[in-house]
Image (tube, rainbow, N blue to C red; front, top):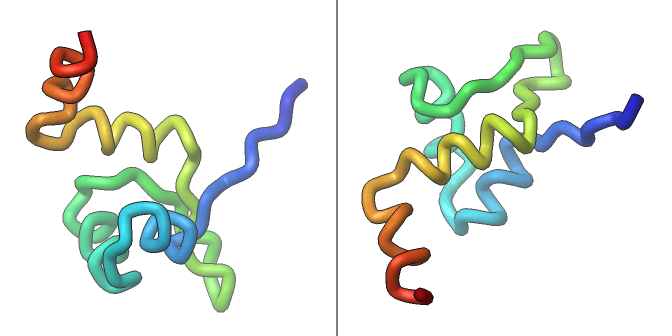
Length: 68
């Protein structure tokens, strides 16, 4: 079985160049699926859930069309 490395709020914030609180707000609002690990561990996001979030952003399909 292949183990998937889950992403942290910090990972997502760095990749998208947004504040960590913005990522937490997306999670609270249900826009980004995450698991709460409790305590200081915080949230973890599966790479597949992060990709689904990115694909759901407005204009996400436009990049592929421009490259074709």
